Length: 525
Image (cartoon, rainbow, N blue to C red; front, side, top):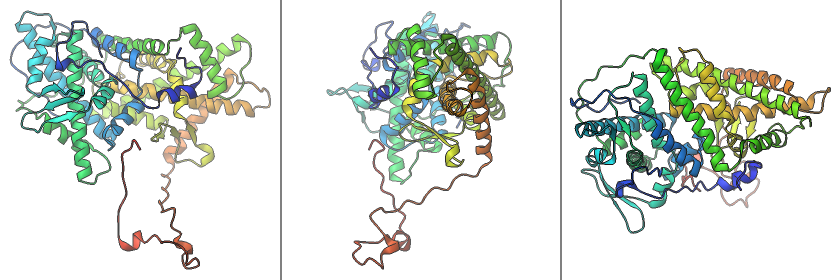
């Protein structure tokens, strides 16, 4: 049985991040019901009319839940690290946001064309036969004997996507989030011209997006290596994507004003998010094979053993008070995140909170950096005794209980109607930040409890001082200058004592020689 009772063993289980997908719908027909599952100009729209039918997000939500129940609900940090590791050159945050917008653009185009085809055929939903002709205009796929994928874009050389790379990438819900994000955009625009996607069409569209994304990442990585660039920036990912999927001649499209956040439009968008958040919690329970009653006991155990690292009172009532106080603090932090992200979204003219708006809010309220092991380093500008490091397994195990998604659900319900709602990508970032905040709050509050002369136990009253401490450290971090990075040196060189030690093998003359060289190998290593 897989339980989150010991986060250290959980970390060991997940370390390889080896994921699998069992079918490739693009290479053959999928049975109906199968669920194997900066800004650019939009594609041109045909003048064909589409019935004014509202598309349902339910099949997309079901596809996400099915995938994450089986493959684990990969958090934003892990998903981002995997994209960086896939070919070795990491993406900037701006490049990641550009990739999202390009994915959504392609989804909107393919979904629109398929909806028109379905409407012309008298259908009320999009099936694979309506979607396939639109996909065929972009590339052709065949499967190799070893299970890899050969993809040919028009006018480009044949490229082969390794079976493992494709299956690992497809095991994370990157493309499903893009599809759901387009569904949310349609709702915010007041509904309109996209028909409901059948489960088989969702699977086909998801795999199309995965193939294009992997191909673009491969091409961007190759270009970065040729240009000796250590990161893939937004122009690079756009250039790689456009080279494979060029933008057709587009007619002028009027800019859409930010819709009113009130009324039925917001209610429908909120309902979509709440269903997404609930499906996340169900996916965690299914993947970890733990019942709610058992999960509560494990969560309490983890609080005093791993997170707060301070003893709890034995009385059940006192323990329930600690959990209740923690959840209130998480809900309040979620509200603060949404309010800060909304300010960023308004400044950028976004109709919903996007990933970059969420990142801005998180760094303002819980400044941190995440290293290559996914350990979280909080308040890095502060003196050492004010900084805090959370190991990846701690945050990972905290997320297994789904508390962060319940708090984000509570937060979107609490904020005023004029506050924008997050899109699925932003929701991932905000929810992950809530989980990091939860572990940090318990760690700091536990330390405060242990210093109290009045009690040796961690009590509900210790939570609020932890909230204040995090808020104060965040403010001090924002006003502090960045800490200078230590200059890297050649360990085996001892230039300072070379004259006194004539037996030294060599000295470091890099600077004197005017050489600017860094050895770079795959980030997997």
